[in-house]
Image (cartoon, rainbow, N blue to C red; front, side):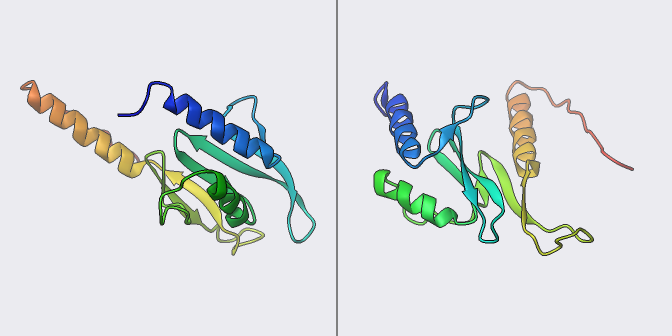
Length: 142
């Protein structure tokens, strides 16, 4: 069990660390950080770092540079700096769009399918504990 203020202390330390890297906190979400950057082809874009408690997601042409800098100030779990598979309970998936201007460009999507399935199973278990077996089913499409 952690200390009462340890979560706030970690968040403050993370904010200082990200701030020293030139990122600015978003007005809409103080745990979403952005900084201007330039792609290798000269196109401007924003690099982003999102943090929720101790889950950190980085969006950049070179995320490894940002994460290696964070790793110097934070104790990151071994093997956790990698292409994301899961973030905040949702699947993180790489996606390509056929027929668009850049069909080889990787885009990222978040899928809540597994999260929803787990939630439904949890509700069924809780209903079973109180002796209720009623359940409903929602079907999308035809």
